[in-house]
Length: 526
Image (tube, rainbow, N blue to C red; front, top):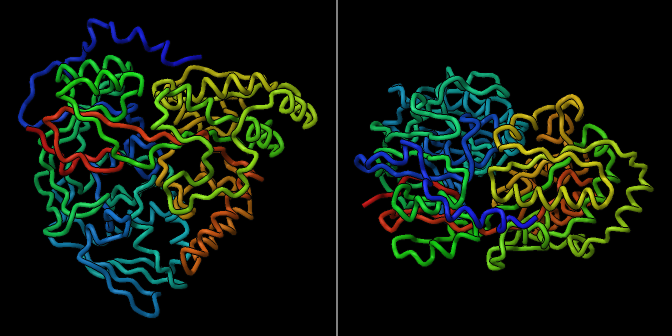
């Protein structure tokens, strides 16, 4: 199915925006932003959703951030002291940090926050395996005592990929790690206005008046002086892409996170609109398997799908602009440090339908239903889902492909039940390309029921990942990354569906848009 044909009628919509939140007059420096999809979960610790990450960097701050070279630098910290041959780290908070409820940020808040984060995050879990004790020395100092040296401690705490190590009040951080917090209280440059949230329509943030940015330094990827120049940031949920584009042209919204490529020519011709590639690595749509339940608990069936997928078909369903599409992508996307071609010689080319059907028959697949999920409200996953559903049917699977929005998918993928009891077989998600390093990526984890949704078991993947984290240098890491990729092709916990370098679009009155995913500090409006 051609997505461009489905959307071509959208440009003729006359009454494009009925939402009062869009039609209201501007008050001060208020920015109206159209995200790729709605914000389903507001707690960044319990979800890997990319929309939640954008939300989290408005509301929360982290002890370390990443500079323009993706190096960890102190953010909420004055600095750190390393002692005892790398087995003791003392971190000192900056003066003047406060939460949105007016309370001071204390070391015990950071301790509780990091302990909760470490139970959910892949890199955090690796760090906490090395932790003997983490404690608050006083109100501003926290100390890690380690069983062994962990020189990448700042890197772990600075990671931007889900889940980021958000610092929140101790009273909230003591919430069980797999349950969302009941309040959203951070210490970042903006506060979440829960009373104005309208699910499926609007999310509102206001400047945090007590926020104290770093006094010096250069603004980086997630570090440096974070200046809240806007009074309010309003996320407006606009499911129809053409409606969003028309609203941007009329000045009813200020910024669209990722307009679909087929509507980009309309914006390119508009002198009041700026187009920018903020993230050169972009998004990698991936197909995730349920390795816990039949039929994809059988690795042979997962490998049959791997060998049948043609990434070019998936990407073509999303866009015709080949300048933003990358086919032939492995576990680590193009432009990332661990990119390699190990085991790629026979993958992701033209599909041999008959060979796949025969392999499926020989593997003993008996026709049980497989349920594929892809967020219909996300252009990337929706387009990929249509292609994958068609492919699965052509090679002989009995496919159920219901229409689901991303919020429903995020909820349903937590189910470990079989399909007939509300479970699932496969889902498609957009994964940020830069978040695929072996230390960060939860896609390559093989820790069974403790793994990310899909729950694959692979002791060898776990061993290789641990070796990568402990590797002495980049050369050793690159070799281990090749070994990890080869093992992924054997176990197939997921498969990449290509790489998309997305463009963002905003009114020329908007300045200061930073590289990477959408961030709102340092953004201004004239």
